[in-house]
Image 1 (cartoon, rainbow, N blue to C red):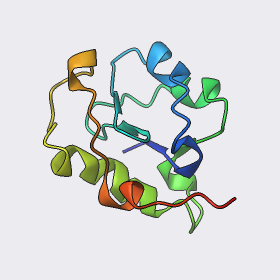
Image 2 (spheres, helix red, strand yellow; image 1 turned 135 degrees about the vertical axis):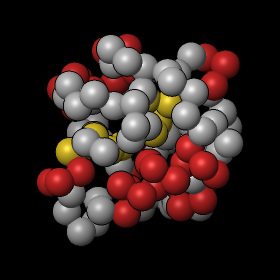
Image 3 (cartoon, rainbow, N blue to C red; image 1 turned 45 degrees about the vertical axis):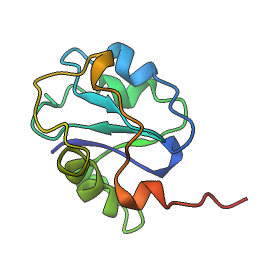
Image 4 (cartoon, rainbow, N blue to C red; image 1 turned 90 degrees about the horizontal axis):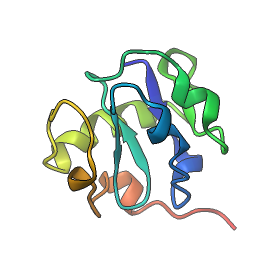
Length: 107
């Protein structure tokens, strides 16, 4: 995996990242977006347009961000999306990884 969506995207989902992704590897869950680890081509376009700095390169994850590496990977299993080979609107879901579903933003 190269790029990972982290906590700042939860309940924001701006979507600029999905617009620029050349391989449509960013999928929409209920509260956040997720990057498919096998479909990402490491171009970095998503990182450059994210208005809330939610996207990171996995090798630069801080200890606080590190759990999102597994969260992004596991989402595709727990949601049932699997590896469809690219996002389209019919693959959007209200489901989230359990860690995201129960996440409470601090006020």
